Structures are given as C-alpha cells and as structure tokens.
Image (cartoon, rainbow, N blue to C red; front, side, top):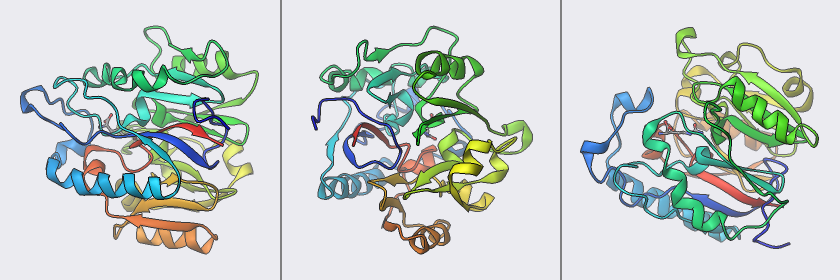
Length: 292
Ligand SMILES: NC(=O)NCCC[C@H](N)C(=O)O
C-alpha cells in the first residue's frame, strides 16, 4: 500500500507513517510562552530532557518499520510543537485540519503542511472547519467503525456536529462527554481518559466521563485506570499495531503496563517525562497519517 495515501480506520492498525513532536526549538523564547493547561502550571520541562527522550522514541518507531516525520519549525510564537496529535487528524482517507482553542497552537499546523500536501486521499481530502467549530485531534478516536469524539476542554458540540456531517455516512460518530475542571476532573482531551489497545481492549479512566457511551461498554474489554494513573497520562500510549504499544516507563504507569501484558499485548516502555509535563504523552506526541 502507498505510504502517500492517507489512511486511518482503526486506532490499532499497523502504524506506517507518522508525524511526531518537534523537540528542537522548544520554548526558544520564554517571552512568547503561553501556559495552556493545568499540567503546565506545575512548571515546564527543561528542553534538554526532551532530546534523548524523543530521539529514543523516534528510533523505536523506525525500528518497527514506521516512517517518521518531524514538523518544520513554525517560529518562536509557536513555542511548543511537541504534541502534533491535536492539530489535525486522519479519518479514513481524509485529513481534518483542527481549529485549536489556544492562540499559541493555532498556527502550529503550518509546520506539517509540507507533509500533508504530499498525501493523497478521497477528494476533497483536506477538510477545514469554519470558525466557531472547535475540535482537536486528541479528542478524536477512529476505531471499529466508530469515531469517538470527546466533548472536552478543547472540543465543542459544533466540533462533534462537523464530524457527524462529514463522516456520519461511513462511521458511527459517538459523542463522549468528558468531565470538566469544574467537576474536579482534568481530562484535557479524550485520549487522556480512553484509548483502544490490542485487538479489543481499551484503557479507560471511568471518572473522566459524565456517562460512558454504550458503544465503549459494548465493544471493548476495559482496563480501568485510577485518577493518579490518569494524572500521569497512563492511557496515552501509542499502538504500533494490535499486538504492541509504546508506553511510559514510569512508576504510575507500571500497573497499567502489566495489565496490558496480561491481556497479551507487548508493551515497550520508554522513559518519557518531558512531554508529559507539558500535558501530552506518546499518543499526543504522534499524528498518524497512514495505518494499514
Ligand atoms: N491529546 C492531548 O492530550 N494532547 C496534549 C496537548 C498538550 C498541549 N500542551 C496543550 O495543552 O494543548
């Protein structure tokens, strides 16, 4: 299959081509930094910790046959290009350019346009939502005929409606209402509380949702995680295929990692502390273009 054809129908299909976060130039000018989430209020990571962690991540992906792309540097006003997951999403054979809530993330997508422009798909293959429609890729999970859409800190009902309008014929588009900061829960995006792994398992933080959709209960064997594990982004693994994930080598993720192993999934644990301190772990730091 062509590496230049957009394709993502399942979260755990074999990952062939992916954009990962850009660690160089991170926070290169502090005067531009915007604190965009609760995690960052605890302090931003030292840029030096990012280098070995991202290099090892990239190398591990490549060793597993994945083509890895790094965004171009956008400029110091976009101080953080670590988590490309949110700026766009491959759905089926199309690409949706996301409308970001935070000002400092709005132009991040220009760093990946050179890659998107080389990709083909079902025309028109690039969709751009209107103003007022807020949606971020971390809130969108395409799996088993569904598009799960987190209505969260970053995606609104209009974002859900947009996806339903464009993809509702081919997918069952399911809203997933995440609890808010006012409810005492910090679910930045859906993938901070739910993530399919393996053939039909899913990691889940049940208290992160106002109500669990039937489609999640019916289609997955659930591996539940605690609030302490959720705070360390234990759901936020990246699947290489339906047998293998990359997860954090971290004490608050080790129980969940073992649960996945018990379910027959190979878990590659890598040290990854810098990006999670900005709010995103392995899923957030990846933007798949091709899964087959
Ligand atoms: N899918 C995700 O949860 N992405 C993490 C995004 C972190 C980024 N610093 C942000 O707050 O937008």
